[in-house]
View 1 (cartoon, rainbow, N blue to C red):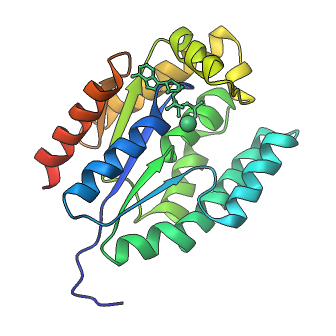
View 2 (cartoon, rainbow, N blue to C red):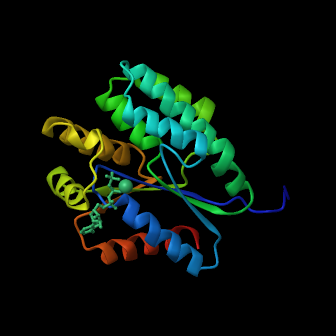
Length: 209
Ligand SMILES: Nc1ncnc2c1ncn2[C@@H]1O[C@H](COP(=O)(O)OP(=O)(O)OP(=O)(O)O)[C@@H](O)[C@H]1O
Ligand SMILES: [Mg+2]
């Protein structure tokens, strides 16, 4: 690896089900490529074959313990960083990731009850220094998000969670954004798709380009 290469940026998209993450990841990557920036799109859990297999396993056969699930997601992320995120960033490419550490904090932490100290320590030992440079939180009313996800015809185990949980998820993400305003930008995910894509592109441009 050439040490003179400038490290790429890691931008993550977060938010509840049907908030538009997977849609906006594609728009952001297109924008970055138009700026001449080599960009990799990836997602969590997953991103590399081993982690995609863990994703399938967790979704098909949810472990009985929230701790097991947390550790499996942590293992998936560790492999994802080692196999894709780290090499891309060190090579000067940018990485746009659909869900990352904040989804863990919210789903395994707020919903699953995993201790914040364990989550924090795991981030320190397995994620750092590959923490996101910038995170967009797509905030939508969970009802709207679920309607969108249903219309798309694909519901995950988490999509089936009850209303109370959806409210907790929304608040969990908003709390993170409020506590890390330098990294996180809250976007109204109820705007039109291209309006949101334009907002995200403008923010990235202002901040980094
Ligand atoms: N701004 C928008 N306005 C209306 N519909 C949208 C908007 N953004 C995305 N959609 C549509 O809503 C559905 C869900 O969007 P998308 O799959 O991007 O959400 P997601 O956050 O990735 O969801 P999940 O958490 O389930 O993966 C898709 O059918 C998509 O085309
Ligand atoms: Mg998605």
